[in-house]
Structures are given as structure tokens and as C-alpha cells.
Image 1 (cartoon, rainbow, N blue to C red):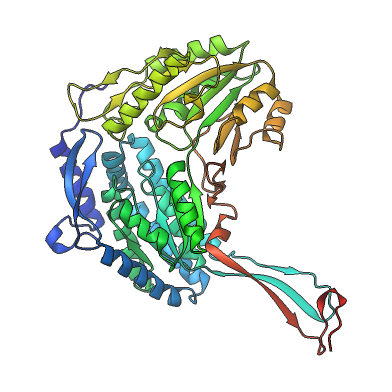
Image 2: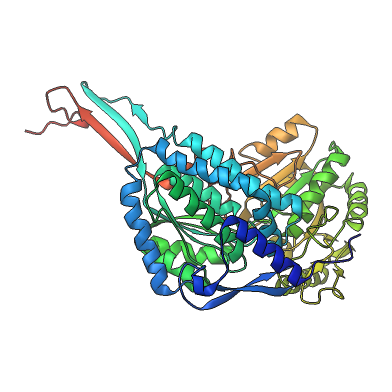
Amino acid sequence: MPRTLPTTEELRTRARAALDRVGVTLDEDAGAGPGAGDVQHARTPLTGEVLFPVPATTPAAADEAVADARRAFLTWRSTPAPRRGELVRRLGELLRAHQGDLADLVTIEAGKIRSEALGEVQEMIDICDFAVGLSRQLYGRTIASERPGHRLAETWHPLGVVGVISAFNFPCAVWSWNTAVALACGDTVVWKPSELTPLISLACARLLERAAADVGAPDGVHRLLIGDRAVGERLVDDFRVALVSATGSTRMGREVGPRVAARFGRSLLELGGNNAAIVAPSADLDLTVRGIVFAAAGTAGQRCTTLRRLIAHRDIADALVARLTAAYAQLPIGDPFDEATLVGPLISAAALDRMQEAVARAQAEGGKVLVGGGRRLADVAPDAAYVEPVVVRMGAQTGVVREETFAPILYVMTYETLEEAIALHNDVPQGLSSSIFTRDQAEAELFLSAEGSDCGIANVNIGTSGAEIGGAFGGEKETGGGRESGSDAWRAYMRSATNTVNYSGRLALAQNISFL
């Protein structure tokens, strides 16, 4: 099992090399940041230490960024959609060329293991491919008119400036979901990333800047804001921002949604998840265990789609738990750059504190820790937060189980009937992702029906995490109801218009109304 970590100086060298190859120079005097403001610090969860100071965006610079995006929109909206797709195509080419560099930055700033970091960049490449095709498929429709000599149609038009507020756990993929689709739809983008991941944000913004220059897109199609919550609030409250797409906690969404609505703007919210998997008696336990362990322990439990609740049939629960605890006991934890590692660090010491508090609550509410919970590598990196993923056997779905803790904690409960399992599954405030492991077709179909999972994502014989970009991503209830990425999620970034054309030569009113 990995026992060593790179030093902070080694990580600085690796990060600086990746940034240099992308075209970002971390020199405050050279204006590497998007505005000359207060300095914030890029840190790495691998050691818990500071990497670099990064200039933050001033309030005045944030306002100017929105103004730039608004001016660019007035030109970009009239650019033919296939031409807009050329910008996204060029971005995808640059992402391919720098996949390794970007993955390095994701690992250094977010702590993801190498394969997951490369996968996140691949997700950006994939959504660019999707959006290029979308640029030739922004279809409206023709509607049958009740009036002779009339044509009724629906058309779609660019919406405006899109504000993107993203979280640390997917520091670039979620940005790309929004940005690639918004640009193809004719919108411009202002991005406020997590303050925990400024380096990967600077790198992505620089590549898009290069792509825009290469295809002759107007200056201002994309702007980056580096800063804290106050910077994001400027996007939320600015009437020039037509859509705010915000990813984060339910608490954050409760603030963003009403504030955007108060100025009659639109919001697209991707909030908390408290995802569950049902394991039926007929499940293939070998497949099930592999799916559960990745979904529950992958990304150190820091995905919004992380599996947090396991609802197993009582006849197979003990056998399943025995396999899970054995698998958990062997998980390699440590340096995410080591190819053998499967679990990297939590993002911060505060995240570790929240995890430990949740486990203590679960025990106070009758839970029994079966495996995990110990801290690792504290002697090597005392400021980092490496922890063993935890499995807790619960007798009931108690208070702590109904909440989302952004950490690798898996609560195990049992059921007798599938109807009971589905009721237990749905009895939480969140509604993002879900799955069932079964070889019974009827059970699978019931779970996917209107009587089954109440989540935006429902899977059969795979875990709750690992969505593809071709399908729309999002959830219901306190998850916010938003949809990003594939399918027809593009409609959130456009406005529709209903058109009636009278070519009959006479005035015919709808509903047979006579007037004059």
C-alpha cells in the first residue's frame, strides 16, 4: 500500500510545468489573474499546503467581465450556429493536446486519482464533441395551425450571458458541460469556479481564450472570475446574466434560486445528492460489490453522485456486507499520482472533521462501524486528510442518514419487499442518482417506472456515479431540478419563440373569434 507522498515543492514544480505548457504564467505582475485584486492561495489536498498565490478578481473587474460578455453576445448570437461549433471544436482539440497537463492540475488541486483525473478531462473532450454536433441540430418544430393559410412554428434563439458557478469536486468537467453547450447555443459565459481550484480554472480559461483567437470569435465570449463567494454573488444578482448555472450544496441553492428569481432571471441548479442502491436477492454479487465500491469510495466519496445509502435484501445482506468489508479493507489509499492508489485525500481538514462528526452521529443513532474510519499518512502529511472509507450498518434510516455528508461513508440498511425498499429509497429530501442491482426484469422495470426511483438518474446493475455526457444530468427535489450536459439540456441555454405566419390574405382569428 502506498506510504509516500510527493512533497509540496515537487507538486509546485509539476503544476507550474503543466501551466506553462497550457500557456498560463503565474506571475502577479504579469497579470496572470483576471483582475488585479486581493490574493487568494492555491492549495493542494495532497499535502494540505499552499502552492501559489493567485490574484483574485476585484468587484470592478467582475462587473467589467459581465459587460464584456454582454457586448460579445450581441455579435455571437448572430454568428451561424455551425460557425459557433467551430469554436467548441477547436477547444476540444486543445483539450486533447493537453489532457495530461490538465489531469495533473485536477489531481494536484482536487486530489483525484490519476484515472479519474484523466476521465474528467475526457469528459470535457466528449462534451465538446457533443456540442459540435449540437450546433447543427438546434431544431425547432412546425405545429399544425387551426387556421387555414397559416403556419405555426417554434424557434429557438440564444439566451444571453450565462453565469457558471462550479464546485471543487469536478473543477473543470461541469464548467465544460455548461460552456460547450452555451457557446454552441449562441450564449457567452462568465465562470466563477471554486476558490479551491483556481489553477485548473486558469488553464481551461486560457485554452478557451486560445481557441477563440484561433477561430476569430469575438473577445468576451468567455470570462473567468477568480475569487470567493462575494464574486459569485455578483453573478447571481447581475440582471445582465440571463442564466445562472450553479453547482453546490442545497444550502447554496436555497440562496441562489430566490435571488435569481427575484430579478426574473433563470437558474439551473445542481445541488446535493444522497444516493442509494437497492440490492435484490437475485443480484450478481461479484458485479454488485465492484459497482458499490467504486460508487461509494471513488473520488474519496466527494461526488454528488456518490453512493451513500445501501438498501440490501435481508436474505443476502450479510453475505454482501462481508464482501464489502473485505474489499474496503484492501483499498489502496494515498498518493493519487501512484497508479496503484484508488482513494486519494479529502479536499481539506474541515471535510475530515465533518466526516468524523457524521460517523459519531451515526453511532449515536444506533449504527455500527464495520470497517474503515481510520486516518492515514498523518505522519507524512499532517495537514492533509487521508482517511479510510467507512461502512456503517444501520438499523433504520435515521437523521444523519437522510443528510448528505461529502465523504466516503456508506450506510447499510435492509428490506423485505421491493415496495418497502423503494419507499425507503425515496424517503430522503434529495433526488439525484439511484440504482438497483437485480437479475429480475420485473424488479428492474418497476424501479425505472413512475412508481420506482424518484431521482433524475436511475440505473440498473451499475452504481450511482459515472454518468455519460449523452444523457441529461440532474436531479429532483432538493437536488434542484436542473439538467446539464446531453439530451435536450441545451434548451435551458436558449429561449423559445412561437411564430405564426399568415399567408392567406385575410385575417382569421384563433378560436373563431369575430372582431370588426
